[in-house]
Length: 238
Image (tube, rainbow, N blue to C red):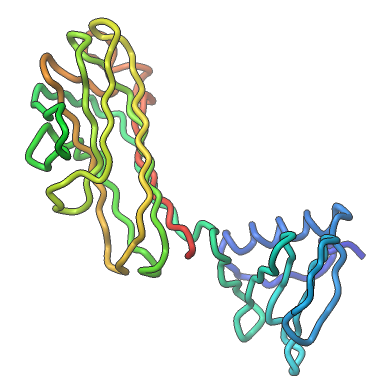
């Protein structure tokens, strides 16, 4: 019998079903052997084996797999249903995309100081919030921007958290000529340190001229509303 013939728990969240599908694929490709144990493994294994640990009452507790160095486990809850995520897995994602045309001539200083929340202008439509499930988890913030500059000068972009004064990360883009298309990507990783909502914001500014986001060379709409900038936040299990 293939694993796909077995009866899987019903009514589970989508991410759990996705994980079960991955487990099925791994087991059915013939790479791994599967056997049942009663206690946590304390031996080395380099042959690609997966173990199901079963409690005394017969309820599955953990699925173990060996990565070549250590044993890792995926835990079931007490009724054998929902799985708890393993370290390094994505447990929550928030995503915002926006095609609003925005622009500013406000300045963000190009010096050896962190961009400030009083500099430039906020791209308010891109602000994204997340509520971490654990203060120990990590957050990865990714921003993708479509930008043009009226004079081909330097554009500066920065991510801020809540009402913090200092930017978390900053980047500048130098256009080759007036209204050249440029893309700006920012990525930042941090420990959540809270289980309260956190809002991440994008501010942008220039040294001279005007920055446009999500527009054509005339500062008008492009691609009928599907020319997006975006912000994504991923929460990673500690």
